[in-house]
Image (tube, rainbow, N blue to C red; front, top):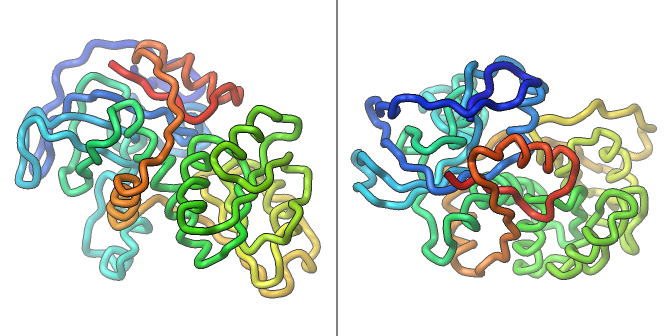
Length: 321
């Protein structure tokens, strides 16, 4: 399913089998999650994508032509971070997620909305056997970015999650597993989403226009809505952290300095590192996350994207060739 230009529907197209380059593996796609970042690319909110482009960076696949790390028929996952130069000051200081030369799956590299793809084998992960293809796919971005967002909150015990979608429904379970207290914020009036959050261990769930019953130590924002930044600052205690977990967000409105005062902190998450992936997948294998996933045939990628755009999904959408 090919994106020819932003703000146009994806088009079903037959292409020759891709050929892996040096250090790459040829992969047969078994499932590919649909991420909000795909929506930002398709809607023209992220600049300069490779065009024409095959979206998709939550890829579960089997190796058709192996390299040094993997052999044929190994099952692997391919995330958003697809390549880094390994030599810049960011890569040399364990911050490969900030590499200026980085390439990204489904954005500057063709991704997984296809039957076959290629990937740099250094950026592929072995997947836990306890998750089938459908339920492993959302771990590869919703899970990984959610995990990095939680990591950047430090040891905060009272965690607010703003936007209870694919990432939040996974990371809520991780936070509860770690003994933290979770408070979930949904779109105002989303009673079903609030019930879902409580099912997954949230102590409280309400609309994003409400205040939680306790001050928060950290707020993790997954909805791409800039006005949630001052809302979250109002909810966190002194010394608290607000972490924006998305790659794109609408403009943040001005707010009084008193919301930031008291050593509160606002920071963003950029991409992920391979360390994030290794840690999250090991944790997922150990604790057995409940992954809510809705299957769509590959040719219904436009329907899946529109369902995400309209907020009609509980959990994640996953395309299956």
